[in-house]
Image 1 (cartoon, rainbow, N blue to C red):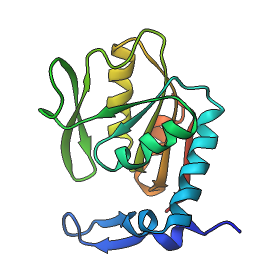
Image 2 (tube, rainbow, N blue to C red; image 1 turned 135 degrees about the vertical axis):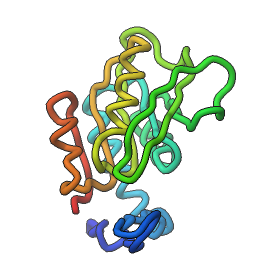
Image 3 (cartoon, rainbow, N blue to C red; image 1 turned 45 degrees about the vertical axis):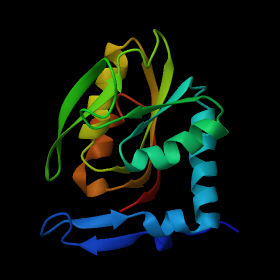
Image 4 (cartoon, rainbow, N blue to C red; image 1 turned 180 degrees about the vertical axis):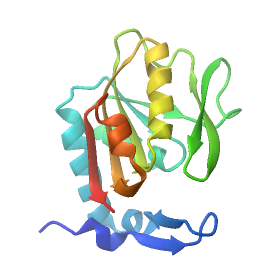
Amino acid sequence: MAIDLKTRVREVPDWPEPGVGFKDVSPLLRDPEALAQTIDDLASWSRDLAPDLVLGAEARGFILGAAIANKVPCGFVPARRPGKLPPETVSATYALEYGQNALELHADAIGDGSRVVIHDDVLATGGTVEAIGGLVEQLGGVVVGVCFIIELSFLGGRERLASRYPLHSLITY
């Protein structure tokens, strides 16, 4: 029987700043059945897109991104915070719903024509994935889909991304 994954997400009020209701996936990750279901669902959707790589966004996108890639099966590429990847990188800066951030990829991480699924834990405004998608394309790759555990529909990320990429999320708020 399928688990209602929403019951495994904890809301942390006023974090990381007042007014934000942070969706914490830690309880979901702690539950072996919920974790397995989440990986299986995201991998099944991704497999149909025939990716060469799954790209996981730091930090929580790493947790499931590599597991999804293993199940597809395909390779995994991490998108890291600046200064965490040696030696040559490409970088993108983007706006968050409560600030600004940047991510980097190895300059040789994605070959020409590589089919890439981007995974992050939460879709909010879509800025993170839009920036990463630009890096993938800059390196010659093709974003064939984007997937998330959680989608915060009230922040408009789907509208920002869905016209460009197939999009899948397991839980919507």
